[in-house]
Length: 212
Image 1 (cartoon, rainbow, N blue to C red):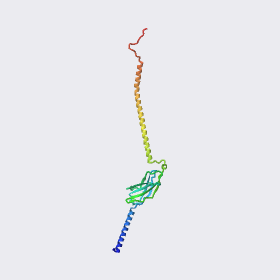
Image 2: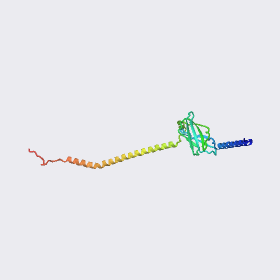
Image 3: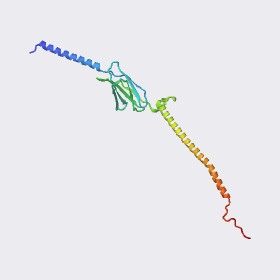
Image 4: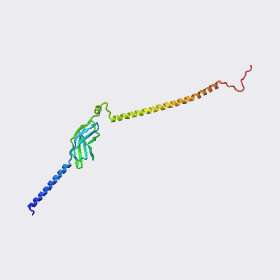
């Protein structure tokens, strides 16, 4: 039969081991737990696209991010995830105009993901509203490119028309020179024909005389 002192010592040793394990596990969980991203903001809001930006706490071992995008009244989600990156922004594309969206951002580390950020609600503008918000003198890069393409097409058409006109004029001048060069020969032929018609022909044997 075991002595009471030995049993008490064994029990204290077991409790101490469990306490150390609990403390170590708590420290590990505290060290690897990520904070949710902060200051989540929507920028560059367009009719069909937007850019979401965020910040993280200094010292968090972040290796990537995950974004959930959802229409306000629709259950369908779009999930975007990227790892091995230090970027703090992401483009949202293929959005519907005049539609409300909800976005959450999570940080990713080797140990897992952070809690989701506070939800951010935003609405895409209408096409007409976006066009109306532009000043008359504002020219986007896309519009500038389209104008340049139109000008290039107009220049090509003008050059082709000028080349065609030049060809027509050259052909006309060539034909005119040919006609002008042939005029002396035509005049000679006409003069020869007229002279032949004016000279009387005498039959052989001379003129016939009538006897009275």
